[in-house]
Image (cartoon, rainbow, N blue to C red; front, side, top):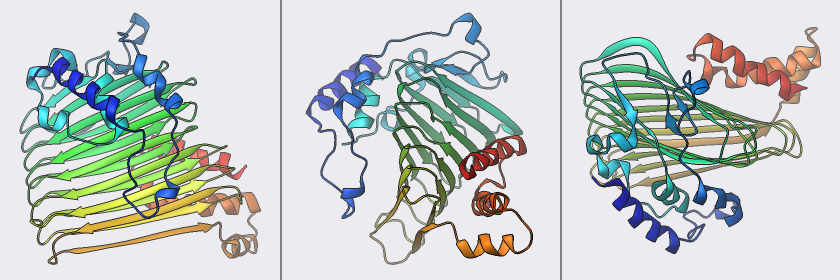
Length: 381
């Protein structure tokens, strides 16, 4: 694979694509408005390697900085491992301008390969720190019969514009758990993409906790490319100030007897807003598949805006699929009930909010859970 050649082809396509294509849903009016000037910084980012003071990080401004600590892993720069990358999944076809921009303009990224038959209960942490505008693209491959757990922590500081895309290929009969932490509360514009490709009998669990920034566009795609694959997405997002999140979670079923579950909860304070788009696509050949979607948005202010948009695209009658979405305010009767039991108003609201998101974050490691729950105090204030 010649990365530079493919990037040039994507640059030609990038020039032809409009910022937003034709709407693919009757709810197109709720889509996030984007302007060319918001993404313009992504066209002219530089390649910056890690300085000495940054060696404690795994990634900094999109460049690999530190080995993960296991000699069994292959780890390094995308540019150094291009011959080891599957080009069909690293450069998927798309008509989305933000995705093509990432493919055409990325300067660096992480290559990580977990060998077959590797098994560990240890949590491996990938820390991605960003303090400058940049475009990065990463590739991870999990071998067959492997079991591995990752914390992927995106921390965006300063008023930056960032495009970060990761591709993960999961081998046959492998188990992958990802704790995806996204703190972009200080960013100007943040575009995060995560593409997963699930092999035969593979299982993926994603726990996604987000504190979003001024304008975030996040897309998580679970591609079931072989039968008996199983994916689970559990997401929670907290909005403050006038921040905005456009989150799309897609489960794409292509083979028989696949399983999927999507469950998302959003808390919106102040003038924040969320658009959650849950998509399930079941192909004609994906008989016996079961795929479910649930989204709940809780508004804490009359100025907060929440939209939950479900889409089921099903081409096989021998499947099970359903969805449910709610957008509601903090229940006054629940607050009053707790107050009648001697609990102060602030504490009552805090307990209700914690109970709202706890089913999502319960499996998350305790230190991460406690930090995320502390954000609830800020929202209540």
